[in-house]
Length: 152
Image (cartoon, rainbow, N blue to C red):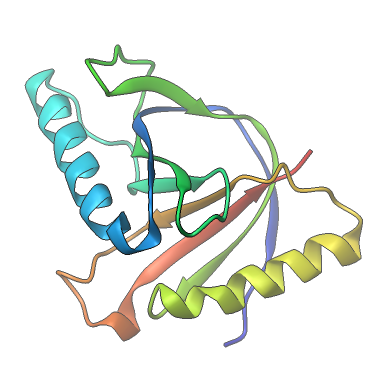
């Protein structure tokens, strides 16, 4: 797949999210639970997501992933219980869109990592994935995932 790499400067983005640790095998269940919990809370307070749901990966330990799961929101909102008000930090970021299975997104990560290194940028070590559709809605080959690396 030919990936179009974009370098942008982004403002801080308020989010509501749940941060947890899980194995990669348990990740789909954790994602579903967190998105549902946050969506129900947003509905309860009369708010809507301001963009696609995301997962931030703070490490790549497949047995003990440190992930933040949430939705962008239009303004800073109060959290509740395990739902926290947070933000995607402002600054430079590199991104690309991946179409296809989540497993195949490894290719996009490789292309982006190479691009970042060749251009002399330094990633923060966090990777974001924004999910524009879900395996419940479309075939795996049509899944759209925007992958984002914030830069130092």
